[in-house]
Image (cartoon, rainbow, N blue to C red; front, side, top):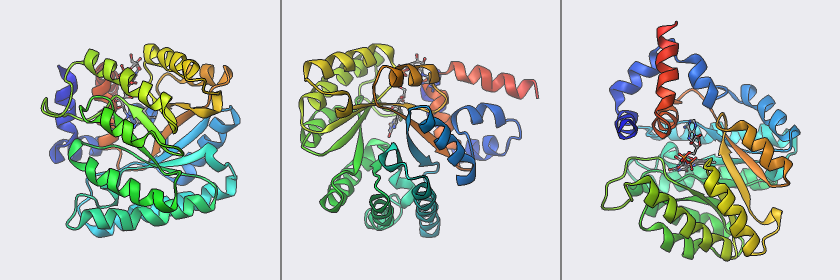
Length: 307
Ligand code: FDA
C-alpha cells in the first residue's frame, strides 16, 4: 500500500521542496546517490571497474521547467563524457539519460529533447561508449521510442529501456529485438493506471519472463535490469537455452542495492553493470527507490529521528 503513496509524493512539488531541503537526508540518500558532482563520482567509477564491474551513469534530474535547464543538463552530460574519456574505459562506463531532463515535457519538447540528447550520444560515440534512454511514465514512451529510432540511424548502439509492467511491452520487445539493439528490461518504477499496466507484482513478474524470452531469443543485446533473485536465475537459464555466450547479454543493478550480488555475478563471469546516479536533483530518483521497498522508509525515518 505504501509504494503508490510514495510514488504519488514523488510527483509533488511541495514534498520535493520539503524533503530536498531537509538537512537530515544525507546518509540515506547517499546509499543510492553516492555523489553530487563528476569529481565525486569518477573515483566510484574507477573503483567499480577495478573490481570487474561495469557502470552506467545517470545525472539525476527530471521534470525540468525551462529550456535553459534542459541545456544545462545536456552540458552536465557533455562534461561527464569528457571526463570519462580520460579514464579510457570504453563501454565499461556508459550513460543513462532521462529525456524529461532534456526538455521532453516542455513545449516542442520532442524536438528539444532530441536536439539536446544527440550531442551527448555523439560525444559518447567519440570516446567509444554508448547511451541508454531510460523509460519514464507511459505518456512519454512513444516520444522516447521515436527518439531512440532516430538516434539509432547514426548510432545503432544507442540503448533503450522497456518496462515489464506495461501491456504494450511484449510488442515493443518484438519490434526492438533486432540485430545490434541494446534493450534494458526492468519491472517499471512509476505509478501507472490499470488501463496500461499490471497492478499485481506477480503479473509483472510473469510478464518480465515473457518479455525476457523474446529478447533472449531475438538478435539484440538484452540487459537484465533487476535485483530479483528468481528473475536473475531465470535469465541465466533463458540465456543458456538461447545459446548466448556471457558477452551476449548483461545484468544491471542499481548502486547501493544488493552490492554483494553485483560482485558475485561478476565473479561468475557475467557482465554486470551498476547504474550509478549522481547530482543534486535527487528527489524523484530517491523517492522511487523508497517506493520499491517501503522498508527503506524506516531507515529514512530513523535517520531523521536520531539526527
Ligand atoms: P523487486 O522490486 O522485486 O526487488 C527484488 C529485491 O531487490 C528486493 O527483495 C530487495 O531485496 C531488492 N531491492 C529492490 N529494490 C530495492 C530498493 N529500492 N531498496 C532496497 N532493496 C531493493 N525503472 C523504470 O521505470 N525505468 C527505467 O529506466 C529504469 N531503469 C533501471 C535501471 C536498472 C539498472 C535497474 C536495476 C532498475 C531500473 N528501473 C527502472 C527500476 C525498476 O523498474 C524497478 O523498480 C527496480 O529495479 C525494482 O525491481 P526489481 O526488479 O529489482 O525487483
